[in-house]
Amino acid sequence: MDLDERKQKILQAIIQDYITSAEPVGSRTIARKYDLGVSAATIRNEMFDLEMMGYLEQPHTSAGRIPSIKGYRFYVDCLLQPAKITSDEKRFVEAWFEDKMSDVDQIFQSTAQGLARITHNVTLVMTSQQTSSKLKYIRFLPLDHRRAIMIVVTDTGQIENCIYAKPDGVDVDDLNVVAEKLTRCLAGVPLSEINMDVLEKFRGTVVDDLDLYRTAFRSLHKAFRKKQQLYKGGTMELLNKPEFKDVDKAKSLFTMLEEQDVVANLLHDEGEKGNRPVTVRIGEETKLSPINDCSIIEATFTANDMVLGKIAVLGPTRMEYAKIISLLDFMKQHVTNILEHYHDDK
Image 1 (cartoon, rainbow, N blue to C red):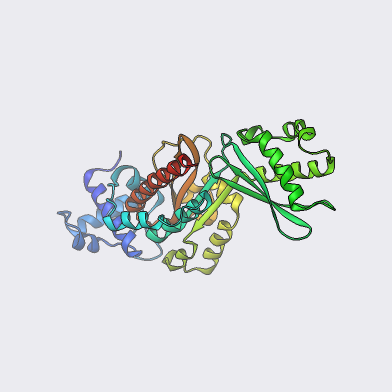
Image 2: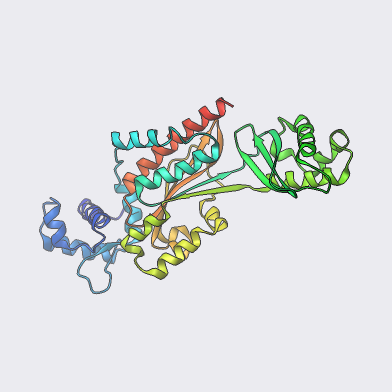
């Protein structure tokens, strides 16, 4: 640690003030608003040293300073104090989910929307299809005279669906006979073990019509192929941030958020464990140029020892780290409890 106690206090004061004001911070502001026991001149000298050491930056010709990525990183790693979740915030979270638990998709979407409401930043929830999930049942629903919808439900409440082109002369009742037989053969089998070779073994048991069966196979395989689902909330909140008044910058960020593969890679971490604490990536640590001026705070959520995905808050580097970290951790625990009870009821 290369900062003495006084420099740490000054850096902390600058970051806290900049988070609130979004304006470069000067030495007189720190001397007036924070009781550090030193003069504005001393603070100015210390700020110059902090700039030379890479913890502060001086934008344009402003007399004030703003934190650098290095400064934010030191703040998050060494100076941050946990923020308490208020009773009102807890009640909001609990009430938010009361009527939003009809299925797993709704729980995840509500998580993204609810957290965005509290943090006023973009919230991302990414779920992944668990290889340990097991097939519960298959069903067909009519769509029109040429197509049906294949519904695949797992034991964790996950629902996948795809459009099925009906062969000539086949109606939905015929398809549901096939679905019932497939369900009897495959119920309780992990999704990771259901492939074309396994399906081929059951053809004689399910139906004599080879074309009908192979078409059902392809649709079933297509339904399983969807590996990830992304839920977003609060995208428009960014337009209220001074950092995104620049139209080109905002457009670049919004375009990135619409690219699911890019966002999935942003949240993907091969080494992530379900019990890992909340993590913070700041600015260029995200390794994506559209969000070089942003930070992302994320956590992994689980249910019954299964890792189900990621929950993250994306906002400007000038975000309220302490508050958002505490809210994210609370939301993570709340969603985990909901999912565990949901799965227990299945």
